[in-house]
Image (cartoon, rainbow, N blue to C red):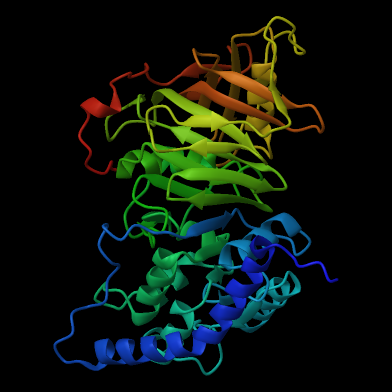
Length: 455
């Protein structure tokens, strides 16, 4: 007598079969609906549905340099799109060589079980008419009926320019992406594909130090993103490798963000419901909190007091529904560091806090140290316009600060260290190492105007 598998084990296969069977019909219906919307003279511009239809889908936001052998991230994208055989639309829009980048991403997703296809929507794709492709109802219907979408890296400005019409309204393709996402699909992206996830993105972003010196301007350093993660979280990428946690601060202050999520390379943040985040992949992410911070008024050197900074490693989960005190759930293999038996002793200092993983190294040592503070500095090189000028970053153990270490691997997490930033000048021979340019200003952000800051 044959053993019959339990019904629960058959459900994923039945679901995929049903989806594959219905996809052509769904595509036909959506094609007709989108055609009417795009050809009607009196049709209103296509925009994202109202907030009442909250997204049921997920985001997989990779910080860039996503390797093909990072099975954890690629498999998660396929899983959230519906599992084996799921249809995933690949957008090579940002790429300098869209044909090569699109083909690589599609082949990688297919290798991990998806049925991936490339959407011919890229300004640098030979023979492509971006405006026509973005409002092609048949092409949009294919995306709307898919289980997910993946945006490759490159120039994020190419993505937003392609998916929004010149008048700022949503193209049929962007409306299709929102339809798929709200229905329960996954939207994933790496590098430029990560930058577009928040409502504000770096457009022509600079290195951290010039950004701190000169601030950010709308339409130059920053510009509107696509906002899939909502309007409460600011997203940045290539975070630890390029020391970009600091450049997020002026952008967050200028636009009133209280939460910033910066994701490192070959790593991804999986976002459910626009506020539940899990870190997967190679390294981790930086979480910045400015809800209780104070900052200098516009027109003066950058100066920040009483911010919070956390390092989230793979396996960690964070709930951002409370922007004042996000709740961290460390990975299942992590245990809280015992402050009574610290591993590190003596002063903690870094002369290049923007170096690769420097800020994370400082935070981790502080969490398992006999010290209450750790200090890192960064300043302009000799011969530059800002030679000898820079910033001091002081990290302090505060109530609620904690470190967590894995009992199975060399991974760790750091939760809610206080961070203060002050402008400095490096001293000459015979003088102190550096001095402060201006006194600190601890005016709470909540007491300041929310108007964008001037550079």
